[in-house]
Structure formats: C-alpha cells, structure tokens
Image 1: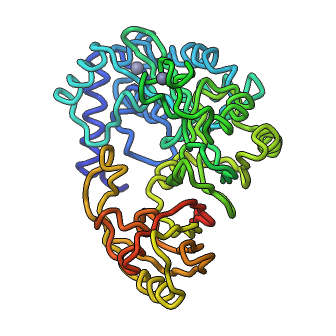
Image 2: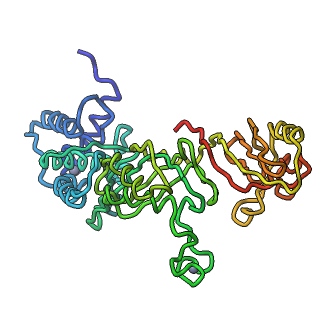
Image 3: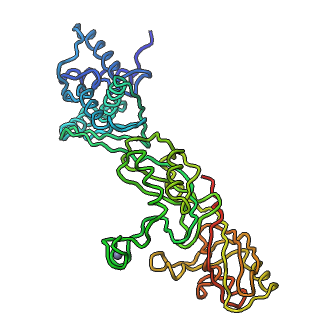
Length: 418
Ligand SMILES: [Zn+2]
Ligand SMILES: [Zn+2]
C-alpha cells in the first residue's frame, strides 16, 4: 500500500475539521477542495469526504438539513432560475450568464473560512452559486423546449442575483448587424443632427423639427431594424462618415446597427434590406446585411481604411493642362494636414500625416476639373484641394499657385476588410 503523502493527509485533516465544527452540505464541503481530482462535482467531493469521515468515526454519513455556509441559498437556485426565466421569456437569446451579489452574511462566512480554514484548493461560494443558477436555468429552458448556453464574454442575457435584497437584475445585450450603405444624394448627414439654434427643442429656424436636416442615413435605416427586432432603441455606427454634402457611392460604407433590448435577434435581413431600399429609394441604399459580433462596433471605429474620392474642383484662374498634370503628380506622397478650420471647434487641433496613393484627373475647362484621389483614411480631401489657408501641405492650390476648391465630392470606395 502506498502511504498517504503529507498533502493528502493535510486535506483530510482540513475536511475532518470542517465537518466537526457545524452542519455543512456536500457542495460547500466539496468546494473547499474543488481543485483536487478531476471530472468531479463539488457535491461528489463533499460526499466522498463525508463518507471517509463517517468511516473513521464509525457513523452514518448524513447530509444535514441546513448548511451554515450557503445558508440554504444553493438550494434556492431552481426557484431563482425560474424567476430569471420569467423576466426574459419574451426575448430571443442563445447565450446567457449569471452573476451573484453576495449578502453581508456570505461575505463574512467567506472571510471566516479563508482565515480559519484556509485551503489552497478552494473555490469561491460565488462560483458554485453561479454554476448552480446556470444549471438550474438550463433545466428551466429545456422544460420550455428552449436552449441556450453560458457565454462568459458576450452573453445575450445577463442576470445578477442579489442574495441579500433578493432581486434579479436583467441585462439584455443589444443585437448587432453589419451592412454597407450607399448615399445617392447630397445633404443627408449620417446621423440625426440636432438643430444648432435650439439644441433639438424645436424653433423657427428648424421649422420646429429640432433638426438641422429633415432626415439622416440613420433615420432611413434604423426603423426597419427596430421593428423587425422589436427593439427599444438603437444606433447606426459608421466606419467614418462622409460630409453631409458628399455622396457615398461604390460598394458603400460599412456600418453596424445596434438594436437595444431586442425581442428578436434572428430576423429576415433580406426583407429589411428590401424595405429600406424601397422606402429610402433615391436617397439611401443598403447592401450586404448580416448579423455582426458585438466587438465589430469597436473594430469599425478603429478602422483606417483607404478611400477613393472623386471631386469636381473649381479654380479661381485658368489652369494649363501641363501645370495640372504636374500638380497632381506632386500630390502623391505624404501630406501634412492640420485639423481643418471647419472642424477645429470640435476636434483636437493637431497635425496629421496621411498618404495620397494616387491622384488623377482631367480638366473639364480651364477653371474646372474632375479629380480622383486614392488616399489613407482620415485625410480631409476638401482641404487637400484648397490648402485650408496653409493648414494642409502640399495641396492642389499650393502646387498650382491658383486657388482651388471642391464644388462636389463623392466617396467612390471604402477599402475595408471587415
Ligand atoms: Zn452549503
Ligand atoms: Zn431649432
């Protein structure tokens, strides 16, 4: 027979000590030794130790009615799980997570155990309670013909059980959808823009709409999603934004729609696209709709995609073909760009370096040209043309020695890998 090592003796000593001080349930006993053995539940660990203890004492192994550690709360898991289900039964979800707020009693007991019965193999009560709630919740789901799994990172519903006050806090995570939009007309901002004069309350200047513009890309896209998901609110997050007076053409600009507290997450995206494209016909079009992971909003915001622009440019004096060609060649390379005057009131004033990869164009007349620019994301193209009073260098104006300004701007392509 292999003699018991000191470590093993140690944990048996600890278990015996714990069993002798007060009534303790199998789970709470086993939890003090949770890191010992594999493929075991804490209840099994506790049961085994209780049996060994009973054998040593010549007693019958019996689990007590009441446990001083969990105070009966582990047994309440099924009832709490039912309550949790009632709160979310009208919502579609495939993942969930339980969390627990301990009562002062449990906190005191945990502290006491740590001090009086230290165990390097112990797990927290919270962990067992979360597990018990999760398992009980899965059973409720099965009894209702539904199913969902635990997700520690992005659960679609999250419960916080307050063991002191007795309440259950429910958080319904938003649903996210990826898509791309094309903006076929000028004069539409990406998102709702409150009136500058009244701040959105409604005044004479805004015709009591509270808005600077009658509609926005967001207002044309969001309602179809809100209705389909039966959500309680939402946002459109764009991968950057074009100016209000610029069109967004080509394959469109990537966006993520976030729907708050959605009742439905599985929706007919083709139907949604059809509806938006019918109702916003001639203004905005959506394409490539698909469900999106929650972290796509952040990736979208961090995206620094190259973009291709087309601008109609007006010159203050006639420009010669050869000078125009030379100026376009001079634009390719690094551009030092100070935050444009027009956005300096809301963006930090600093100098950015951005690359122009390609610049081509043709003169439509001595004082008018069409210019196509392929450049890094974050470059302000209007200022690349005008020079912005020396804030952008080089610029088309500077290279030509003639004032140039953008009369019309289109984004032709956003090159992303989302
Ligand atoms: Zn217990
Ligand atoms: Zn107003």
